[in-house]
Length: 132
Image (cartoon, rainbow, N blue to C red):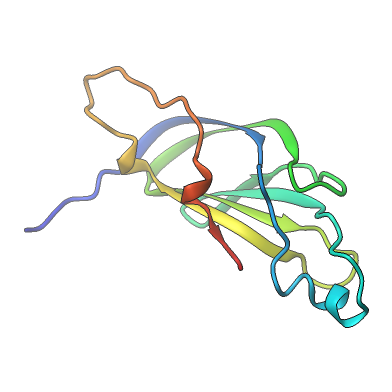
């Protein structure tokens, strides 16, 4: 059975409220273990992409595993397939550490073209794919 993928064309308004229960990855804990220190709190920020194209990122929140952002991203999307939100830990030295990500397919939100419904809700933390 050949299933045609539905593409999203329209205006996307994404509001990121908060991230809950973030945990440092094993990789980010490497220095704490080596020097017998307690794990530090994260300095997280979220990168937002549509079809692997970065559309923006939130501000970095200092020393917290439950950051509150209340930031919006708005753009027109043509032939969109997926929305990705990836959480990173801002590190002072080297590359930032990956914490978790979530990929949502636009076709999962499209119910029918005539329904007039919109999706307004939260992404459950069960959808997150962590770097642990």
